[in-house]
Amino acid sequence: MSYNGLLSHYQSLLDLPSHTRPVSLLEGNTPLIKADNLSRHLGGGFELFIKYEGLNPTGSFKDRGMTAAVSEALGRGATTVICASTGNTAASAAAYAARAGLKSIVLIPQGKVAVGKLAGAVAYGAQVIQIDGSFDDALSMVVQITDKHPICLVNSINPYRIEGQKTAAFEICDVLGNAPDWLCLPVGNAGNITAYWAGFKQYHEIKSTGLPQILGVQAAGAAPLVLGHPVEKPETVATAIRIGKPARGEQALQAAEESKGRIIAVSDDEILSMQKLLATLEGIWVEPASATGLAGLTHEIESGKLKMSGKRVVAVCTGHGMKDPEIITKDMAKPIIVQPKLEVLEDVILG
Ligand code: F0G
Image (cartoon, rainbow, N blue to C red):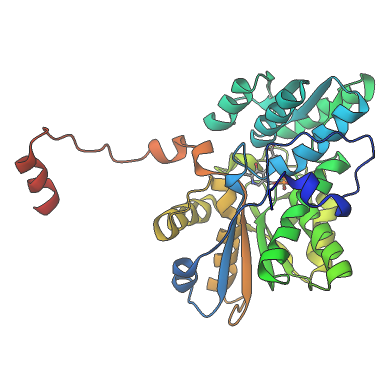
């Protein structure tokens, strides 16, 4: 059966207006990769799967929500979309807007957007505006401007973004035959955790697939949901989730509570070491934010707070490593240079 993208595949399960005109890059349908090496490294005895969302068309899970939001905007007759972004939403909005023939405007926090994301937004033709402030400032500005002018907001405040993103939960259940015991994922503006929980609940109602416990993970320097108050100056190496006032914070807390899960924070060191482990043990290179869910899982297992024995766990890895190459290249040892002679190469390799 040919695959025509999320909106067509899960049409009957998505609450989208009839005017919606599908704009797709064949997003979704991402692999659920068994990670036995990493599971063994964490003590073993449980099944671990990576939902590799970095394999979406623009390199992050945002494409799931963006196909829905831009399709609705196009059908409604919008001519321009706008978003605030730490980078991935910007690239995704720009790509789908380009395909739909719409203008896109993206507001990003100055100097804190990974190069692969900024390059994407520029390549897809967005008008890129840097705000001398944080993501939270940028989000407040796009909300204000879309209140005043006929420009369509495609941040995850837009309900169609959630509709699109909940398909990741459907896919996981379709592949596994039911919901996992635990789902762990990074939390920034909290749209994705909201969408997963909505998706699992919906599938459970119609297909009795069960419900996972949800472990949402923030970076310690940007952990408003763990601290219980907004963070004025969020700071973390995981720039994608450098957010101090999550738009869907309440819903994230609700998802954690209803699912009998929790939201925790991990340090930048824990995030970076998980990024490295995942790449070197499993061949899966993700951007720092995307390793945060797994870093949280590790934190809970190692501190004895979670026993995973016999469980099935899915970790959502939200964006590709190539989005943020600098995080690797800035500290890497320079490759050695050798003359193009076999003896020299043999010397280097065989000693
Ligand atoms: N992982 C990555 C790679 C992200 O880009 C984001 C959010 C998240 C996790 C967190 O998801 O916000 O739904 O809780 N990025 C947004 C952006 C903020 O602008 O690209 P969330």
